[in-house]
Length: 194
Image (cartoon, rainbow, N blue to C red; front, side, top):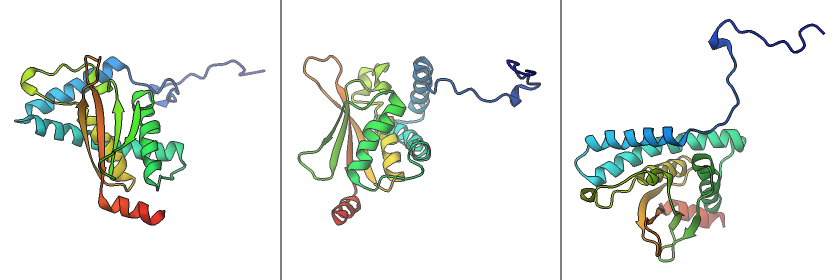
């Protein structure tokens, strides 16, 4: 029974194995880091559209990496090849990994065949943000739109993605809708696949 119950002593902190603890980031740490990202980009631009574009670009890089991670970890390096499959993947799996829950809704646009919308009552990146009157319709959801665009582009579904506020009756804050407009080539491929 030699060595049973004995804790291995490491001489160097770098030799210790990484813990498999909770895989979550503190909400306050995320809010602080995201606030710094917004403030830094705000000092670098002249207008709101440019600020939203910079946030979207920052989110794009996150989306590319999230897709790689999830495909490797959960899907055995396989990716979705169908339009509804990738939308469901973003709506459920990606959203759950990033925000801890599935998105509130995924809807198809009624006016255009190539439009889909992911709606969230209270998007995490907008939760702790107060927008000054002079910034008008600035939406930090542009960062999430960039993440969605990064996931879709990397999966082979090029699209333009934007974030919009949609007023809700009886609610003080509007909900955020991520509008996805797929490129024509995606719809052509989907029609060919049947």
